Length: 391
Figure 1 (cartoon, rainbow, N blue to C red):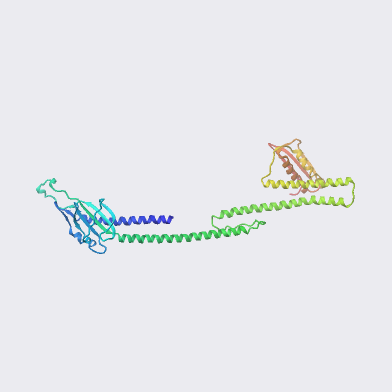
Figure 2 (spheres, helix red, strand yellow):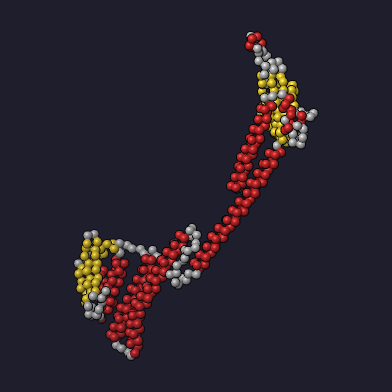
């Protein structure tokens, strides 16, 4: 549409320029013919040399003119023959019209006063008022527009050809750009489809892609990196859970198998049940931690902060690992003030403390010490759990 509007604008500008030049030539001819109309004091005379001009001679491409003085014909071009060249009823100007020989053309109508040739003799001292004023003359000059029309037609065809060529070229360029763009998108789509869901560590190559797709590839690579990290964390978490569950499950199985070997007294069964219950509590705590972590990663972990007795919460968490610590001859050293309060979610705090104490007991060298301390630091409470494990 822009090319069409541009073509129309160029056509109008060219038409105006050519038509203006054509009319200027017509006005120059009219001025030349008007200069041949002379006023000799009491009569109007037309210079007959105008009739000898070649463009006004009879012929195939003749031009025409006719002169009137006070509405009466004064002179006419030989090319008119027996025809008339009527002036414009609206006065001076240039208009489109049909020429006397039937051709299409432009006719100039001009109103003027003849050139004064005879002046009063100064020695006669005749009053200026006695000299009659020059009459009003009118002139019509006609010229066919065949050459102008041909030039305009050639110009239109040239602009039409250029527009068509431009459209074809533009279509070719657009087709090439679209083909390259879709090819790049296709390559990127195939590269994305080739990413293994179980191994998202692969990265997409941005080389050879359009600049518009480079930020998309960069964001996709960042997403793949986050997915790879999340998958690695999930695998590590699964391995840790399997490792943690294996020990209590093996203990439960061993206890039950021992109980089945021979009948025992009720006290032995109670001991086995208590031991089994301890391992089940440990497993339950682990499963609860797993569910808590899943809710936390999903943004669904709710908490209710309140004043919590930190000493009581820590001792409650220690009771879950105390038996394992005793089996490894670990000695706990406490430095927690009774009644020390912290504002937190009691259940979540007990879970965090249980994880810290369980890790401390699991990785401390046998027969070593575990130090548990808590102290107020301004508006916060600092909790510290340390052991003698290397590193």
